[in-house]
Image (cartoon, rainbow, N blue to C red):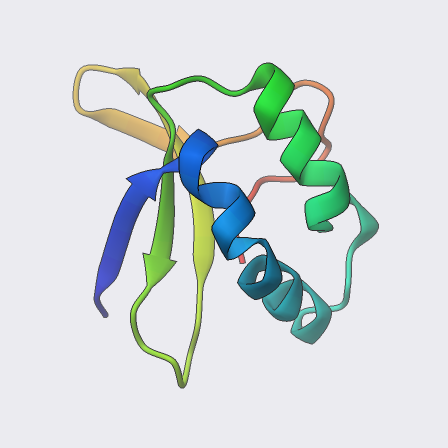
Length: 87
């Protein structure tokens, strides 16, 4: 399993179609739609956040991670969102 990491604030718009494709395959949850999650990320995200994109096209995956403490990362989940940002 290989992943590429990007700055989330800069890269999310470029990967929003992939994000929505995976969301549709996984049940099309409204709170994970890029039209909801993009602005949420833009207004409440930070420069330290990473967008992880799985390289394997047979089993795609995307998630948003944020650095919490030294060597501790977690899935991005702002208070306004009731579900973690992982596909």
